[in-house]
Amino acid sequence: MAKTIEEKQYLVRYKADKKSHLTILNHEVCATKCEELLCTRFCPGDVYKWEGDRMFVGYEGCHECGSCRIGCPNDNIKWEYPKGGHGIVFRLA
Amino acid sequence: MPEKFDVIVVGAGPAGAACANVCAKNGLKVLLIERGEYPGSKNVMGGILYRKQTEDIVPEFWKEAPIERPVVEQRFWFLEKESMMSMGYKGKEWAQEPFNNFTVLRAQFDQWFAKKAVEQGALLINETVVLECIQENGKVIGVRTDRPDGDIYADVVVLADGVNSLLAKSLGFHKEFKPDQVALCAMEVLNMPKGKINDRFGLEGNEGCSVEIFGDATQGQLGTAFMYTNKDSINIGVGTTLSGMIRSKVKPYELLEYVKNHPMIRPYIHDGEPAEYLAHLIPEGGYYAIPKLTGNGVVVIGDAAQLVNAIHREGSNMAMASGKMAAEAIIQAKANNDFSEKGLDSYRTSIFDSFIGKDLKKYKDLTHTFESHPQYLNEYIPLMNRAASQFFTIDGTPKREKQAKIMQSFTAGRGKFGVAQDLYRAWKVMK
Ligand SMILES: Cc1cc2nc3c(=O)[nH]c(=O)nc-3n(C[C@H](O)[C@H](O)[C@H](O)COP(=O)(O)OP(=O)(O)OC[C@H]3O[C@@H](n4cnc5c(N)ncnc54)[C@H](O)[C@@H]3O)c2cc1C
Ligand code: SF4
Ligand code: SF4
Image (cartoon, rainbow over all chains, first blue to last red; front, top):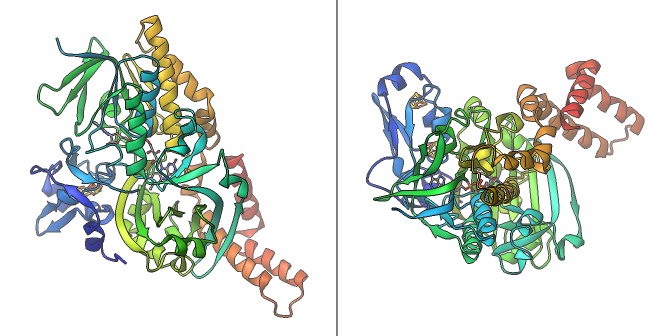
């Protein structure tokens, strides 16, 4: 059974664009105003990782669910759709 | 002069494809725009498709649509850590035409459903994101896409762009949804041989079963889990309000693993082969979250309009029904050559006069009540489980004594008055 998020993410097909469709507006805000680094917790694709003093955004694994846009308490994420035909490609449910 | 359409529909999910279908069938020139590689490639649902609203668009669709199984049994489980109370209904009549509902796989169903709109004459273009609505003198007159020379014009633009409706928001039809107005769900498709599914769920042939799971599956947060049988796979998923997910500090995929490993659930799905992992939001804000539905040259349908009944897991059917109502209003507007907000207003009134508006109104306070009174999930479901356990355990205690003890256990925590209050409150929000 696919237990870890890495195993789960391997089940999904992505057609990643070269350019990220997710942008952290201000890394300073994450460092100082968001103790729990919320997006690193609730993102179902584990897209966000805090590395030292910046938020690393692995946009290639994004499910385009929208949770980080709505759930970031500081409106600190610029959220767009990937370019047409790019991003996640579901085959089943 | 660039090409002009009567109607541009943004998004080829159930809402958009239904609207495009009905408009095209009635002779309108329709463009259906989808950002995914194909319709359904971005879309997710547990998988229960209701017959009625689909049939209203494509009569006798089950004869050709890629459906998985007709559902003959609906189960409801109330979970505790190591036990559950269950109820449900199974009926052979649901295995026959005209059926009650079906399990479907969205990536396949949506492709087929959009194709039916194309057969009616709609033009479908994939791999194209609509970036904004083009406006002139306070009226939407077309869309700007991410294609080169990507401006396209129409009398009416239909926003069927789903829960992340950046377009309706940018028109000011609603503010950003709040974390308690959306549910974050994670799910998996597990492949399993048909015979094994039938044995485990007690099914025959191509009959299907749905299981809605409450209680411990969401670890005390407001939400549900589900298991639905496909032909040779099982969809299993769990979701809570995004606010609940944030509060609980559990990651969505960890919650999914918790559900998969729950002792009441594991026997049904263990050794299933993971085939796909999906995550999506459900707009569950209900009645109060419905945005402005019509503007000059524009209407909003489906998830983009928050038309979801979370209690009855109805979403795709409301999407299709709203698409059809929008189409009817547009056809009328075309006849009157009036695409203003007023000219399209019959769409808004149809929604609120239909089962959609009425059901959402009926449950308007429900989510809020459960979210602010967690005792329903956290106390009553465990109590119900313990009561059942005591009642069915034969240990020499007389039944009358047992019942008295069970009643005591219900009122011990919250007091008689508290329980009465809770019951009254629950009755009021459901009535
Ligand atoms: C886990 C889960 C379980 C569910 N279970 C059920 C169930 O069992 N039964 C049920 O009836 N409902 C269920 N639902 C709800 C159901 O999935 C939705 O209500 C339904 O899909 C809404 O249809 P829609 O057409 O409005 O939106 P969507 O299906 O989301 O379609 C929107 C479409 O618009 C496209 N799009 C978005 N923006 C743009 C843009 N700017 N340009 C071009 N294209 C764009 C998207 O790619 C997508 O194809 C469930 C939902 C989830 C997440
Ligand atoms: S939730 Fe927002 S503020 Fe917090 S870490 Fe993420 S991006 Fe930064
Ligand atoms: S949209 Fe969803 S999957 Fe993508 S980064 Fe945001 S929370 Fe993660």
